[in-house]
Image (cartoon, rainbow, N blue to C red; front, side, top):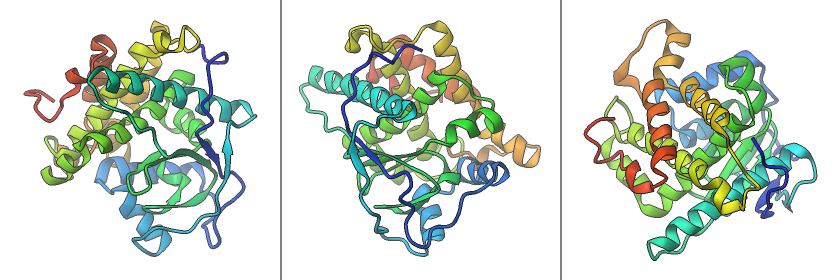
Length: 284
């Protein structure tokens, strides 16, 4: 994946090294995969998980991190990709006569951090908090993706960022509220439809990344395959097999591996968010 020459927007809040008081220490790889299975398989919403970890359901105070463009390579990668995703959505919204409001920040942190949704922890994986309109990333998740989930490559990491910003888009459009009214579990649930739409939105970003960036951020066909593998790695059926050796569609919260790959591919091929209407789709 080409990105090093891309433009950074500086919408990063770097909290690395600023773990909140009383935060639980880091977890091992086994803890990470168990937490991921709990989230992706059993439908534990990030805000619920954070409430349990943080001891409450409300916002958790957190020292503000350094805002701007990180100097290290990992931080710059997040900045460039997130900026490119925002640039794509800015144009998409403009084409429909609307104004896009980017996330209030993309927060990179380690171990644990306070959020508008409660306490966030690295074991939960990347997430979007609608209460404060921020995306949260512990960059150690990249290693966990490779070692625990088998999703490798920078494009796989970019897919995750684009997926989480896709949730921000859904917050702006009202899709999140629609999802809540439809229920949180099951193969046809609002939660599954929301996640598959975010996968499709990640594909829409991939389709336009090069054009919008003037060729500075480019995904070739191999990169798209890395994104597809990342989508497959976090399918409900795949994670359920790892956790318990069987698949329970009634407990789906994100969609099967096949569905997640198919909707990501739909976004790539169509390049149009209108093709991502999972809430009206006859086939998920």
